[in-house]
Structures are given as C-alpha cells and as structure tokens.
Length: 226
Image 1 (cartoon, helix red, strand yellow):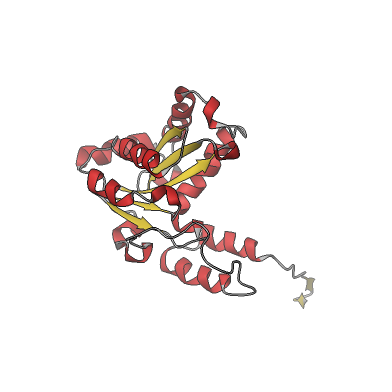
Image 2: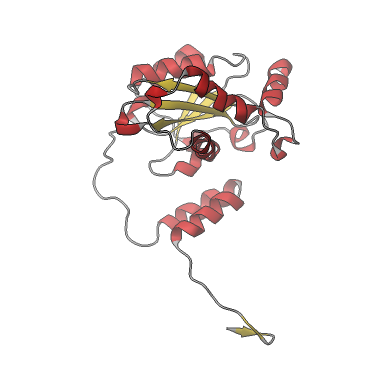
C-alpha cells in the first residue's frame, strides 16, 4: 500500500498478538467487550466438557462489584497457584489490586484443604477491616471456597474458564516471580526465606502506577485509613 509517496507494509499478526495488545492497552468495559469477540473467531479451542470439573456454588466475576474493577476501594485481591515441577509443589500468590501488594506462600501440596488454609493465613495478614474479596480461577484446589469465605468473612469471585486475563494483575505478578526465581520449578527446595524475599522485593519496589510509592507503603496507608 502506498500513501503520500511513502511505501507502507501491512504485516499480518497472530490472534495471540492482538489478545496481548487488547489486554495491555484496553481497560474496563472496552476490554471486556473486545476480548470475547476476538476469541469467537476461528475454530473452538476446546470441545467436550471442562476437564477440571465444576465447582459448586460459584459466584462468577460477572457479579463482581464495580469498585473491584475501578481499584477505588482496597481489600480486593486476586489469587493463583504457580504449580511446581511434576505437580509436586506450588506457590500460592495473592495480589491486592489497589496497592499491588503481594502475599506468597510455598506449598508442598495443592489439594483443596491445603490451599484454603494457605489463603486463610496469607489473606489474613492484612487488616480484617480491609479484606473484602478474592478473584480466583476455577481450579479444583478452590473446592473449599465456601469454607474460606466464611472463615475470612469475604466474597470469592471466579473467572470464566480459559480467560486468565480476568485476573491479569496476578498473572503479571506470576511472570515477575518466575523471573526472580530464575527458572526454579521445584518449590520443595526453596526455603521459606527465599519465598518471602521474592514477595519483599516486589512489595518494596516503587511503582509508577502508585505515584512511585511502594506496595508496602501503600497497603500500610490503606490499612491505617480503614
């Protein structure tokens, strides 16, 4: 194509590239509308029933309050597991959305009871007056989510299957953690201090999105104001 005397080359891009652009640069309702439209093109990515099974009594992310998306109110978190080598260990990761504060924990097992207790302990580190919700995926490790919300006195929201960007803050944090661990995938050999150190490095790093405050400073301020 030629415009104004300059040659311009049109380069085709993959669906994954478009997804990444939308996920990084579009916000709010526009992103929610654009991504599903993109994923409807082409062949279905999966046929048959969801292989992980279905959790009971879930509240989907569609019912999440607007204050969660806006990040105006503290205490709304996202959680995920980074599964270790041969599925024999895991890292539990929670990120508070407003302050970007990270809570990590090493797990020798990732069954539902172990994950529930880890989340109770990790999310319980924050001031109970601040804690309001967790957004999760539909992994079977969340089978005890009803007990979790009763014990911690919060709400749990669940992403749609295969849409990891619905908890994009935690997904991005997972990539940072992977880089800091320099490819380590057997979390059984990590000492507790090593896991804690990674969280400390993330929480003590100034963020432009926080006005160059650190997540640690921001969460302490939010807890003090609650």
